[in-house]
Amino acid sequence: MAKNRRNQSAAIRFGPALKALLLCLIMAGLAVGYVWQKSQIYQLGRQITAGEHRLAQLRDGNQKLSDQLAALNSPVMLDQRVHALNLGLVPAQPAQVCRMTEPPPDNGADRRFAARQDGRMTQ
Image (cartoon, rainbow, N blue to C red; front, side, top):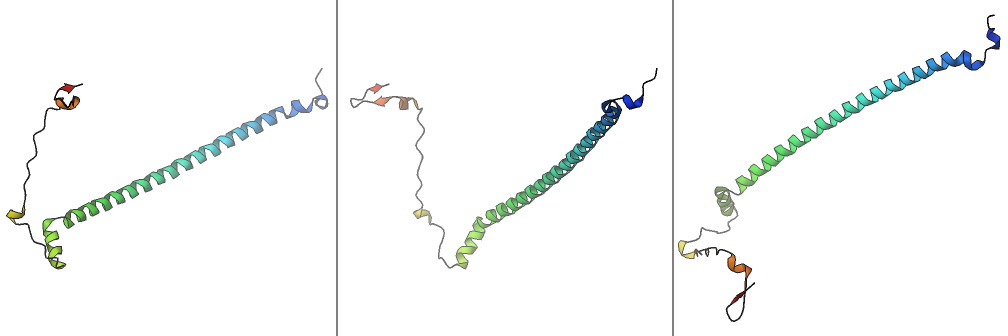
């Protein structure tokens, strides 16, 4: 004898519809997650590009400043500035230069010992 559809419970009739709805929700969630992930990758790529551009600008600025510093520290430029500001500075005469010699380095073994007043070394 065939079963009557009126006697079937509501859970049995709506089961396939609930499964289809759940499957659609899962697929929609996965699609939204995929689009969000791609959006994040794109934004991070733009941030990296902007950071690299900023780094290139800073390196260029540092190079320009380093070149400017080298030019300002050159003897020719310093001499021009002295004359422009009327400072009256002149190079030192050879008699004004005092040359000092550096003492030769000792072997360092004596530094480990402290000298007593009687002249003997102790550890």
